[in-house]
Length: 146
Image (cartoon, rainbow, N blue to C red; front, side):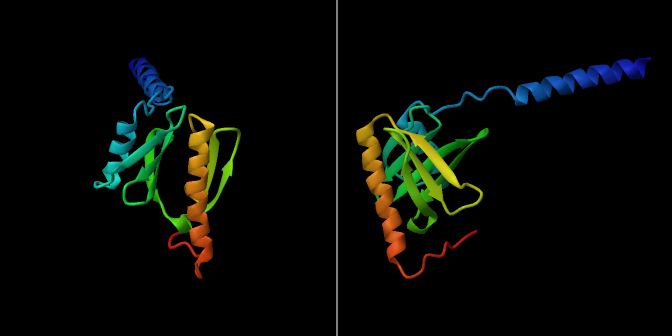
């Protein structure tokens, strides 16, 4: 009888832990400084201008060294990457102010960023398409990683 009660209690505790882990994730980017801080975890010397997504789940960074960075919420963690020309397969505009960036990485195939306005979206479209054209004009279109 005691072992049955212990198993029931243990089952309820495990169910509670599972429920808590699957609870709604509300962590969002509320200010540009947070996106830059997340990006600096991987790239400590990064500095630049940040464009936050409307939903707070992504950000594009125009870096002072001329590069482009991406911060995106995937599940319960933040993923960051520097967008190199050969890593971008294509850029599409979806709606008036949303961008879908298609990447050559099967682990992170695309990122969708809903920007605050059409003007900001157009600026990023031009910047990201220029990166795509830089890659396609070179002799080797191969991506250095899988």
